[in-house]
Length: 307
Image 1 (cartoon, one colour):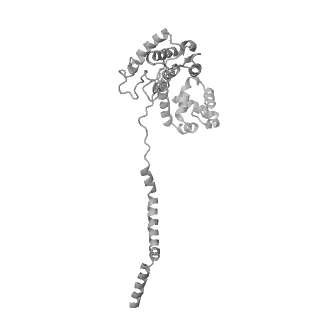
Image 2 (cartoon, one colour):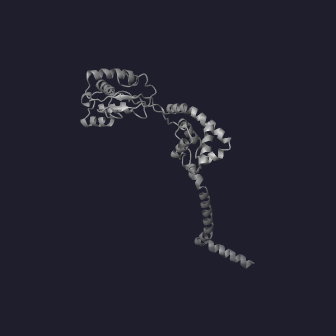
Image 3 (tube, rainbow, N blue to C red):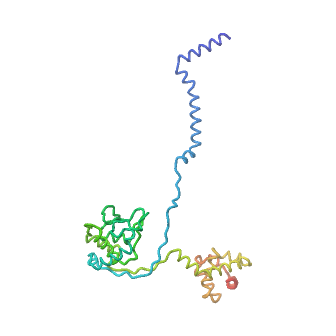
């Protein structure tokens, strides 16, 4: 036993005197510990990634505006070689337009700070300064601003003004508020003409807001929709429900098609012809081509009774 302990003692002394032996003994333990830590990290990798990547939040500040009401009108052509000059008549008209449309924001002196400018960000333009113009201070550039507006600001589009009125307003601003305003080249004016078709004039169609158009259509179809729903209830409660469903891809579309064409369907042959000629677009499907004459007759009588 004594010899056994002596051997152990000698082994310990040998290990103490050999650092490499110590490292060789403990290295497998460090390797196992490192492997376990790696497995733990991998198991939590998805969580750690989610924690570090900020979530993308939906922009709730965006406002979608409907198109405005606009009456149909004819836009008369303008002669650019004449209207590019600031005549007394244009300046007088421009002054009236400025006072009624612009002074409330840009001020009577054109330096900004009008009574309606409080809280606007960015603030309305100071016309007396040539710094920071979005589109520029040339006649053609001010016309573009009046036509298009400036997105992201309180500067709306004045596209409802006639071209001559926009030129008059631009001339007034340049003449009264801008010192040594930059001049347009012939190519600037030609580009403006090409963009807005000024020398040819144009006819603008009327437009109404989408929401109003939908409301008008819904009111127009309200009676028809009621007939469709009433017919659908009768079909569902009848023995022909399965038969009719088998012939249609959309029962409501098929019934609306029949309701809208009801006055022109005066016999069985007309009914058959109008359904077949518009199949796959009128709510009916290709199975109608397999109907016998008797089945067409039954379908016509049944639908005529419920519609």
